Figure 1 (cartoon, helix red, strand yellow):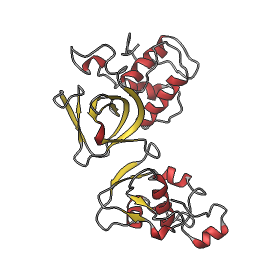
Figure 2 (cartoon, one colour):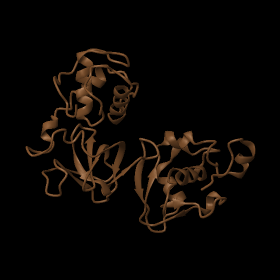
Figure 3 (cartoon, rainbow, N blue to C red):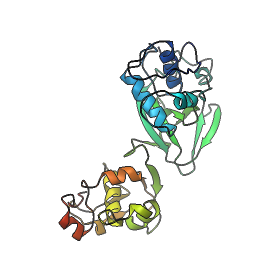
Figure 4 (cartoon, rainbow, N blue to C red):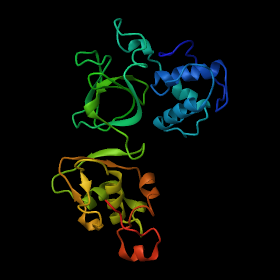
Length: 277
């Protein structure tokens, strides 16, 4: 079962893992319309449905508890664009929910000029709207021709060029940042981690280490340590490169996994090992 089927009426019923019936089927229809649910519409609230619910709740800034109550139903009710408006009369059966390769990842627009959202995976496809840099999307499918099928927080969906979307952020709350000329790690930290975030053991040097850790990977990176045992003050940046800026919650969660950058703190804390990277 590829496209949403049956009723799209929202419910007052409280749903959770183990629930079943027509209300769950309606829930699954809405989640599929949002591009978050890929399994059959079977009316059974299993782990796949629960995962999709949590992702939807996170995207809508609701408590991601996996329980569908009044606030989640209200958000689901805004998904008013039927799947049939995606594509056109010549689109193949199952388009786009059963085509291409499943991705199922949060993504952000990585092109500074934005990217066009289209109704078909074609550069001449119907234009729907312009998505600005750092617009958050949920990427469901990758289709031939280097297209992603994405869903927005407002329930709209469509196709964008794959090369203009960065997926798999360090955490769902991460944003992208383009490094400026002569901009060092601490200058970037000062812009994004302020106030109560800066404290002994988690000062600006700690957050410089967090940025290096969050941007590990193959190839040239925008922020990196030149050697495996380099100290935080040796952190290097590359002008014009995009880097992930993790959420404050994620950054704090790395305490004990990355170095504080403080010699005095490192001597007194078991978590004071210097970041490798």
